Amino acid sequence: MAIYDKPTRALMRQMVADMPIMKGDVITRDAVLNWFATHYPKIKEGTVTAHLIRLSANAPSRIHYSPKPGEDDLFFQLDSSRFRLYDPATDPPPIAAGAKIGVKPGTLPVEDPRDTTEEEVGSAQFAYESDLRNYLSKNLHILEPGLRLYEEESITGIEFPVGGRFIDILARDSRGGYVVIELKVSRGYDRVVGQLLRYMGWISKNQAEPGQSVRGMIVAREISQDLILACSGLAGIGLFEYEMSVSVKAVGS
Image (cartoon, rainbow, N blue to C red; front, side):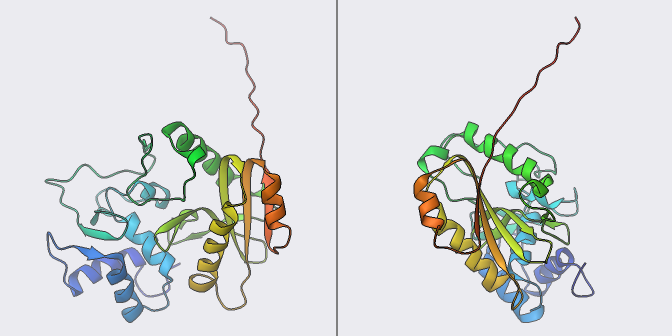
């Protein structure tokens, strides 16, 4: 539900008119955040950034935010922090909801959605992590009863933006607290702890209300002993290993 009399996506268009932003002008993410902080300070930074991505026709992560064809194609993302107005005459067709976004080996989508390690580079690994993320986002109860995907104004917790980077899944627990979930398609090493703590700190500072809890979870194919040791003295971080199973059935010819 919108905090003000207009939803955030409509306020984005108001911002374009107020500044004003003209065809060819480049605007930064910080300038957008500053405009909202001045005029609509109750809207969280993560919500503003997510809507900026939702309204960017070429941003791969917009598919998680239910963009409306023809209505939500306002910007064109130049890099992780710069945008201009979308020009349908010269720019590629908008990325639509439900699209499968391919990633070339060794590259990232425009908005650099995750911290990567050497074992995760390549299109097959990204596709695998995407499948795992999408499955877990619909079945968060298997990690914890009452756990649900964060949602606000059509923005979901899948690839939720945090200061130029992206959380794999942002969830809410049964008590209303935030849960930051990071996925590793192979083995989880201790270096992921710093990544998770950074995301948790960002949510505590910029998204959570005073006194609202923020926890973390790491889900990996295998949890290494160094990761277990690294988390042994930390409160509020859960470790999970997942297993994949496949069944087949005969089909008549």
